[in-house]
Length: 111
Image (cartoon, rainbow, N blue to C red; front, side, top):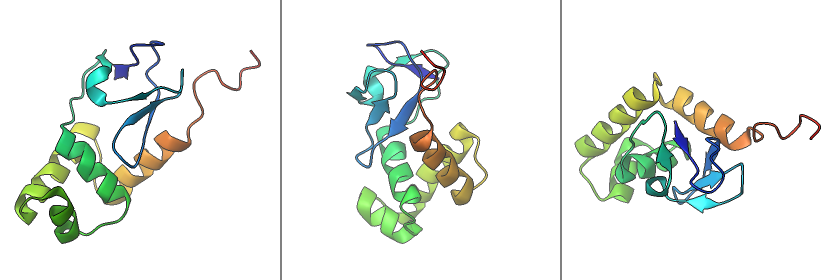
């Protein structure tokens, strides 16, 4: 888990450009700006690959967009599955959509 350096929250969405959107203070951050609390380190290429996987790109198109060989793109996606504990494209896409749709913690608690 990573935390926002501005507000300390750890609830983020991912934008199409691969930046993180903090639900706590609405800051747009690069992952490098966040503070690890329980580090799951995802590389820039893996973040980029995640955006393309969520968009439904096949592996060949993903490789072209990443500027890598198809085998390298597959390696990036495989590492993402392992790091994020996902079993495949459907699960990783569902997790990404849930993260973007989830309200910030405490947003509906009447405060």
